[in-house]
Length: 239
Image (cartoon, rainbow, N blue to C red; front, top):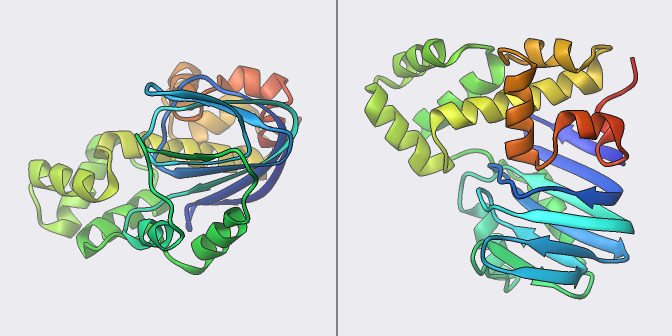
C-alpha cells in the first residue's frame, strides 16, 4: 500500500492499495473509496453490496470494506462544516443510511480530493470549537488537562463545552481525543524510527492495549495484523 498524503493539520489522508479486509468500524472522517481495477465489497449494519467500483461513506458510519487483487484508492476527509455536503449536493450525490455507492468507476474521486485540498473542511462555523480543534492538534494533554485548557479558551462550562463540541464535530471530546492520539501515533510511525509500543506511548496512549483497542475501533483492523500484513504495512516502517 502507498501513502499519498497523511496531513493531520488539514485532516486529509490518501492511500492506494491492492488489498483491504477490515472489520466493522467508524471514524470521524468521510471515506471515499474507488476501484481503478477490480471491485470491492461494502457492508454496513443496514445493507451489504458487492462488486462496487465507487463509494462514499459518511463520517461516524459503521462500515466494513473488503477487496483483493485490485487497485483501490482511498481518501479520508475530516469534514466539520457544510462545504463538503454542499459539494456532494451539487454533484447529485445523496447518502442513504450514511453511504453512497456505484457499480461504475467515478471521476468524482479526483474532484472531491481537489475540493478537500482547496478548502478547510475541518473548520466549523463556531470559532470556539475551531480553537478547541487547534488545541487538540498542537498539544499532547490527557483528558482532564485538555478539558481545563478548552474551558479556559472558550469560557464555557464542561457540560456546555461538551454539547457544543459534539454538535459541530459529531463526536464527544473524549472520543475526539482518542482519534487525535491515533493520528499522532501513526504520524510518529511514519516519520520516526520507532516501534509500535514506542510510538503509541509517544502519541499519548497509556499502553499498547489502549492503542490496539482504539486502532481497531477506528480503522477496523488490529495494529499487529496491520504491522505483519500487506494491508497497512506502509504505515509501519521496519525498524
